[in-house]
Image (cartoon, rainbow, N blue to C red; front, side):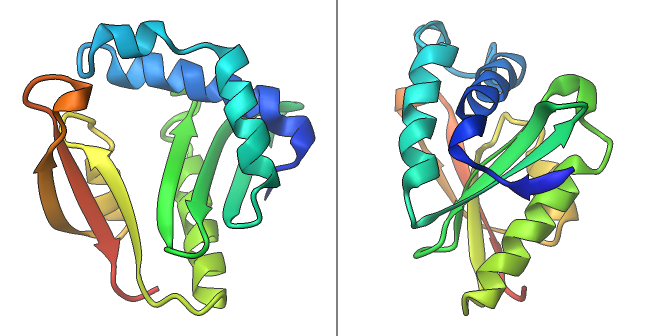
Length: 157
C-alpha cells in the first residue's frame, strides 16, 4: 500500500534506507561512509525530514512493513531519495513512488523535476525508463575516487 509517511514510519524508513545503501553502494562509495550508516542515526535524520513541511515523503508498505520509500523537496522539485528493499525491486514499487511524487510536484505548479544518482548506480537506467533525461555530470570525490554524480530531469510532468 502506498501512502504518505508519518512520524510512526521513521524507524521503517531508516531500516530500508540503511539496507538499500549497503546493497546499492557497497563497492561504489567509500567503505567508511557505509560503516557510519546505522538505523539509529538515520532514524534521527528521518525524524526531522518527516516533520519538514518542504518534504514530500511516501512509503510503500506490505504486510505491515515498509519495503520502499521516496522523498522530494517541494520548493525545488528535487527528488531526494528512492529506496526499495532488494527483495522487492522489480515489482513496480519504484515506478509507483516516482509517478506519485512527480504528480504531486506537478500539482504544486512544478513543470520540471530533477534527481541525482551516482553513475555507478545501476538505477540510473530506471530514471531513463521513467522519462528523465541526463542534464549534468560532475565528479563527487567525497564519495570515492572517480565517482560521478548524474543529474536527470523530467521536463514535462
